[in-house]
Length: 317
Length: 317
Image (cartoon, rainbow over all chains, first blue to last red; front, side, top):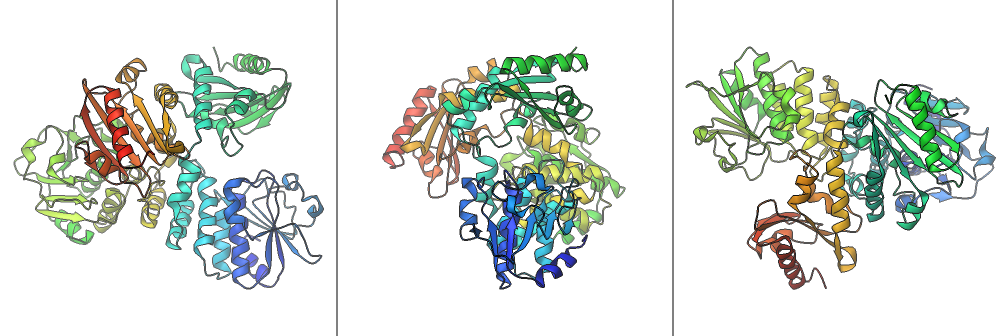
């Protein structure tokens, strides 16, 4: 299915839906699940979201009354924002091979579902869900609009990331036209940081080492700091990209020891570099602009291994 | 003039324009001036932006070739984003009382110009300029679109602030449709911070004192830090709002000694508080959510004076 109208017709002909989200669900996954669930219910249908043990606190209010741990034999399984079955949420193993419709925007979607509505030009799956709601002629409510706003804004860093398109911005505008109160959402997702997160950032800045005239920044994030400052997973959101927000930094490496005896490195790079190549040399991978790798050893071991690679790749002179 | 069509007709009937910006010009002022200047030139007209000594480095490329220090006797004076003549740029004193058209979005506009196109429901003057370009049937170029994008995005904190409307987001979407390359703009304005700014933030966090169960945060920003860390005016952008980005903080006070012997305080407050009332008690003023005051004395003197007010106003128990 390439067109939302087809998926809309398919959904309208059915009832009793169970919506699946992916592992480590983000704003796009949760927003899409909530909007679709509410939209289907508004049409008089039965719809539930399968409980994801990794739903974080900030979504609790929006998910209230929509989440279940019981599934009927005949439920129609719909996955949102899930590119592959490898990403199936923990506790969703029973649904492997059983997804009937997948709504997604990832070009890497493996077509694991019986039907797939894939719009890979979209920055967020929320844009696809919006079109789907309109195609089903759902009377879009404030709660649905806010769920879609959360989806499109979080997947684009509040419209800052390079994936943002005119359609993303138009979709956000339409959520406002349908009553989305975006100010408190923006404050929670894009403005407020906890004191712990800010203290952590301060320590990261202090620990940062610069190479190649400030173009390369390497810094460590010991788990001891995370525990001492009581920083949560929600707080740690996109911390890997933090060193790349410093002026002049083109390649950044953040080294963590969140698993004992291992050094987990996140590499971020400007266009013209190849973060995935550097990580591949140590057994990792990813994209040119964002990649990662885990090596055995301490924070120092990881840092030194990556420094060696960056020297050999002539990133550091 | 309430309608852009009227202002468009008025502009189309004239030639030889000089565009004025306000003191401490922000992205909205510069973006509007650039877009209007380019738009008028694209129609074969002569148009220049009067040199503002406070234009900062980040706008240099966009202003190149558009700025003048010479004015013809017959030039038509147009001001953008300037609410009152008190805000006239330094070096623009000769234009006091001579503005023929003012394009603006501030409800506080004093109607100092002969004609005023005021759309006070707009988050940014850039939204008005966009409508004006369309009304003049300008073939909008990438450079014009990017100038308007800078205007609307900077005035709304990249669409995060409460002034953001559906129209703001639709306007941003249209700039993308007209070729605006928003990723590098977003990186410069909303993502990159200098090392100095980040180090400054780290020190502010360390110096912060909390009251009323963490609802009130007071912190000092000694000028010595600004000089030691070589932080520029561009770097200091919206530093006054920084303490309010901490989770749980409802009222924040940032105290600076940028002028010797004086303590300059910026107060930010959540709905339900009245920052302007607290500042008024010390001789300052502003809005309920954002206000300021300058008192004689040291940083400590300023902090203690404000703490006294906050106690008397029952903000601090």
